[in-house]
Image (tube, rainbow over all chains, first blue to last red):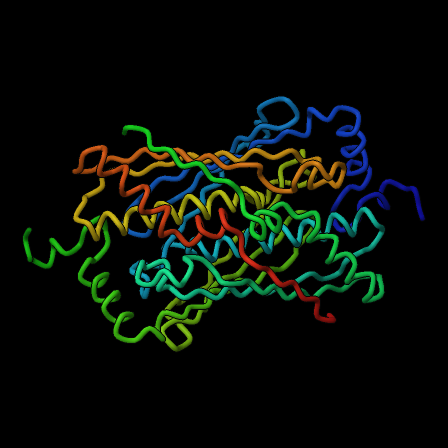
Length: 190
Length: 190
């Protein structure tokens, strides 16, 4: 393996920084505590907008983002919206796809595999009798989600399969979507 | 209550269509089966992009969206990215906020409550020793999520509180995030 600076960047990930981050967390586990945040505002009907910017990491507020991100949600006509954005369930599929993909790319970088292509398609099945409150035999969300990856890189299929497995074991959103997270909802007087 | 056409639209939701949809699903439950989809493509490093357009609903492919939605994900510098978008865990918070808000707006519309303001802030706590694979005592995802709503409308606080409760009981993403969903991941040869 080459030890030049260029060789340290694999899949767009600087592995020197990656391994340095792992060492830093091992040396001081207190820097591992993160808090991510989102602020959402209703606009009209199914249209609402989330603003994301600051977060807490490594024992301080992270203010490295020059501008906030704005994300619009909506619903299609059949669900009484005007398509002002993907709907919330579709955003959940996006969160899952993005997290599995980034986990895969980072794991591959750490293990010396150069990827040339990562694509995934996700499908979530839902019977809306649940969310509409018409039949308690149906849950509100997806019954199941199917993710199909196409991955190419400089490794045999068996190795790529191992990386996809490892990505599932390390993905934050895969963990949350498959295992669930306690959610506390509070109402403050307006 | 007025019965004019205008009065049927509450919180930007046409309640005539809303109640008509409920009646249609009761009359023919087969139209309640939906499938939502997302397609993601890796670009570089932590940058990947999801495309969302078609879905299945009411016994047919829904092609009402003239254009696809494109959503970019990324990571901040401290997580080895270049801020090409919110990160996947932040998108999960967005999906949850958007779904709770839309559920609240629809439930309020159905129950005759006119809302003037709905805002929410979400926080998710995570120890990244889990996702980094450094310590199995920590999960990959958030330990917990806190959602704080501010809601104003033409109803007493107790009624607004009841609507927020009901929104949790009906939200597709709240169900998925709190209870989990089975996810099957498959690798296709590239």
